[in-house]
Image (cartoon, rainbow, N blue to C red; front, side, top):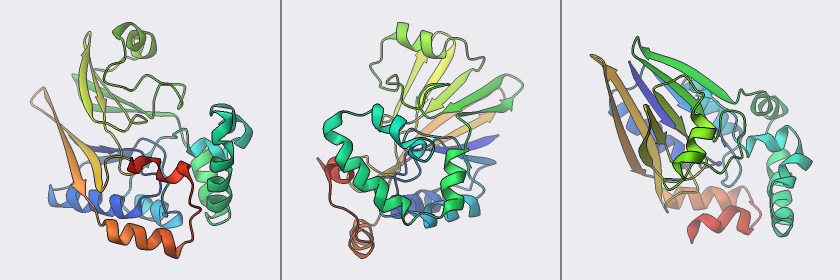
Length: 236
């Protein structure tokens, strides 16, 4: 079985198009999953969800998607000094994203479980199994914290996003995979991970795919995005 994984699109529709084009060039996959944060940070809105559904991408809920579940709870996770920026981003996106897609994001599950083979089960979430905000997705997260977060999950491989940098690391008998981000990652590069499970072996390949930054900037201006650090911090 072959599975394609990506996460943290954050409205970067040009990055998403580049990732899907690379996936097609690689021969496609049996299943495709996005691990949360579909919008919030870039100019893409309904067009992001349109494209994901068109390609039969299954989705998990990320922390930015939870702004459509409970705005006050979302803000409570963030430092007070960032609230004004995030509110501008929320007002811009909620006034433009269709109500049907706002509900779709709010209703997404926090996780998926995929049977890759009789020997391999894959668990997917945005950050932690029951918390899309958990700060456990770094390459340097202490093993004890990883065991507390993922130890009870009955899967040989666990994939997540949230922290926008690739890594693959071992935790006891489990393989932990950060699929990085389609948007709000390295300038002009979108990330994707491919899992191939065949003959009892699991192979992980991680890609960085260039996307059209000129088109991205054009959409930012055309759609009159608010210019705030909540949007542009990824450039630094």
